[in-house]
Amino acid sequence: MKIATVGTNFIVAGFIEAARQTGKAEIVSCYSRRQESADAFAAAQGIPRTFSDRDAFLKDESPDFIYVAAPNSLHFRWTRDALDAGRNVICEKPFMSNEAELREIVDCARERGLFLFEALTVPHLPNYRLIREKLPLLGPMRLAQLNFSQYSSRYGAYLRGEDPNVFSLAFSGGALMDLNYYNLNFITGLFGSPGSIRYFPNRGKNSIDTSGVLIMEYEGFVCTAAACKDSVSPNFLQIQGEKGYLHSASTSSNLRDGFTLRVGDSEESFNLQHHPNVLYYELLDFEEIFAAGDRSRCDTLLEAGLRSARLADRARLDAGIRFGADSAYDTR
Image (tube, rainbow, N blue to C red; front, top):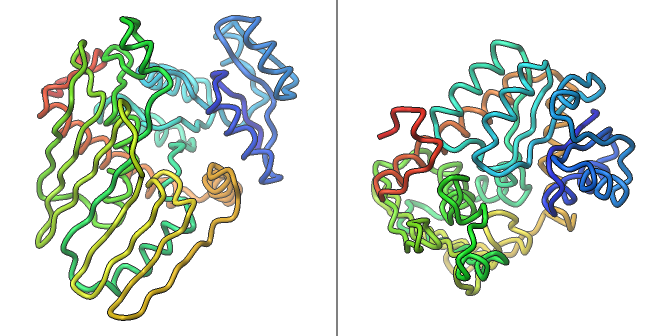
C-alpha cells in the first residue's frame, strides 16, 4: 500500500510512523505548499519524493492512497481532487466541515469505485471493540459521561489576537470538531443516533467554541460529553448501567489505559492495546480492507462517518456555530 501525504505537522509524522510499523505500507512522497517545508519534512521522515506543485502531486500515479492532513476546511477540496485524480483517500478527522460536503465526497468515491477512509482512531481500537462486547453486562443503560480536556498549544496565540486554524470558523475549527468529535463517535458507535442532541459551548472572541458540552438523549438514559481546548483536567469516560459500570482514565480517542468493568461485586480490568502509537490500529484496518477489496467494510465506516457529520451539524448549528464552508450548502 503506497501512500503520499499532504501536510507536514506532527499528526502526519505520527501517521507515517504508524504506517511503517504495520510493515505493509510505504510512504512514497509528500506535499507542502512551500518546497522548503516539503524538503525538510521529507529529510526528517525519510521520504524519497517531494512536491510543492499541487497539480503535479495529484497527477503522480505512484501512490495508491493520498493521506490528507490539511486544515479541516480544506479536506473537501483536497479529497475531491484526489478522488477525481483516481487516488484512494485517507482523510484526517473530522472528515469534512459538514454533512453536505461529506455526502458529496462519499458519492464521488462510490461512483469511482475508490476507497475512502476517515483517519479516526475510535472504531479501530481493540479496547473500544472490547467495550462494545462487554456493554450488555451492565444491564439497562442509565448514564454515560466523557471528558476530553486538552489545553491547546495554540490557545495562547488565540488569546494574543492571532487566528490559529484550530480556533477559526473559516477553517472549521473549535472544540466540538477537534476533541468532542471523538466523544461523539465513541457514543454513537455504541448506541447509535440519539433521540436528541444539544451543544452548549463556551465561545471565544470570534464566536468559536473553545470548550463545550454535548448532551445526547437516548430512550432511558442520557450521555454527556465535555471537551476543552481552553483548560485542562483529568480525562475519563464512564458508562453506567443498572448492573454495574465501566470506567477508563483514558480519552475516547486512544483508550490507552484500558478500562475497568464492575458488575455487582466483581471487578476486572482489561487492556488489549500495547502499541504506543494508537494510529497503528486504524492503519492495520485500512490495509486489510484495501488488500481484500472489501467495499462492505469501507461502506460501513462511511455510513458511520455520515451519521457523525449529521449529528455534529445539528449540534453546532443549533448552538449558532456556522463555518465558512456552510455557506455553500443549505445547512441552516
